[in-house]
Amino acid sequence: MKVLLVGSGGREHALAWALAQSDNCSALYCAPGNAGIEQCAELVAIQAEDVDRLTTFSKDNEIDLVIIGPEAPLVLGLADRLHDAGIDVFGPSAKAAQLEGSKGFMKDICKKYGIPTAAYERFTDVTKAKKFIDDNAIPIVVKADGLAAGKGVIICETRQQAYMAVEEMLSGAAFGDAGQSVVIEEFMDGEELSYFALADGKTILPLTSAQDHKRAFDGDQGPNTGGMGAYSPAHMMTADLEEKIIHRIIEPTVKAMADEGAPFTGVLFAGLMVVDGEPKLIEYNARFGDPECQTLVARLQGDLLKILQASAQGRLDDIKGQVSWSEQTAMCVVMAAKGYPGSYEKNTLIQGLSEAEEVENTIVFHAGTSKNEDGDIVSVGGRVLGITATGDNIGHARRLAYEAVERVNWPDGFCRHDIGHRALP
Ligand code: AMP
Ligand code: GLY
Image (cartoon, rainbow, N blue to C red; front, side, top):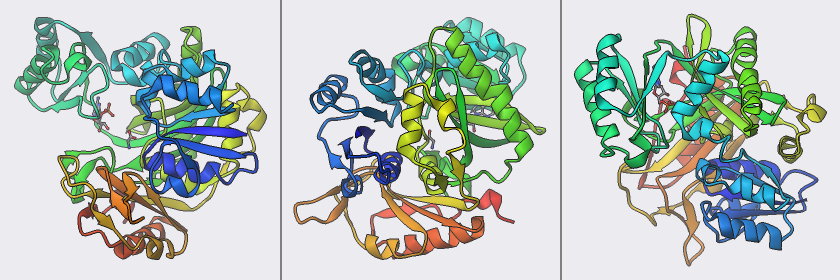
């Protein structure tokens, strides 16, 4: 099979690493990729949002399956275009990707189909939004409807703060069009975890759980980021909780999307809050998490290409039983450019990567990396490396991951030193 993977982050390096191991993969292309992906795929110089050129490339090169990593091309309709061209694609249509692209859409689906989530209302009018804030308890949560690069959620401790959030969002000042409609919802007090499941439009294939670390600095301090580290499985996951997540949240969502005429194909990444042992949906993403994906592929036992193709072709039922998960714990520690998630320097030299990979059970996934004219690895993004290790338990995985981090010689980078802290005694 000839496969095109779309994206350039750590998630995509992890996917490429696993796809390249498949016996069925005769050619693997990645657009635009990074310096790590180059070790296992042929890079194609097309940006992930360039729907026209990606479609043309796939047709011209007789690609059998396109795997879409990030959300932007999904929302832009890349999957629809490829589908129309008769090419199999892993990833939802633009309409189904609204589960991630519009918080209001997602909440309305939950309300209509009885899927547990925080109580909410949607607003486009400031006066009505303020009245709702007055009538409800604080803390209260204000969310921009559209994609806001992970910054569109404000947990408001006071009503004044909530008024300000709705004013800034609804005026367009905060997030442009993405904020001109808001969701205001009940604050849920509990423990967070993420759960991943594949869907093929009608059937689901449950995958596994993970836990992310969103803040930039140790002790969950500092600004929100795309994720500074993750581990899988999540420490509070139990068989009973997994059952509830699958039967009360994931399955009803896939059925709802089919009933709504927008069948969901691809991966559902559910952000969940566990309140008194009961899972409630915080949000959906229509793609794998980054860096959660790095920990998932490290534990996956099975042929990733076969699995994603089955999702794309509506055949998930056929491959149930061919997917299992290592009992080990995987941990990914992200190394980012100093300054991230604010502004940071680019083209800084990174050394010691092969020494890092010599640590047992450790893989160095690249994110924002490139090769300079001398063939050296340099940073070109905010999140730059994802050092991923597997171990017998979280302490073991953590020891290996940080041993590898120590071997990376990158004076312009930083990482958190406490990934997995909630799971450790
Ligand atoms: P989201 O972008 O929807 O994942 O929200 C970002 C973060 O805000 C989540 O990971 C939660 O930590 C938090 N959050 C969102 N909605 C709620 C809520 N209703 N109650 C408590 N925390 C929330
Ligand atoms: N790590 C969170 C995300 O991928 O959205």
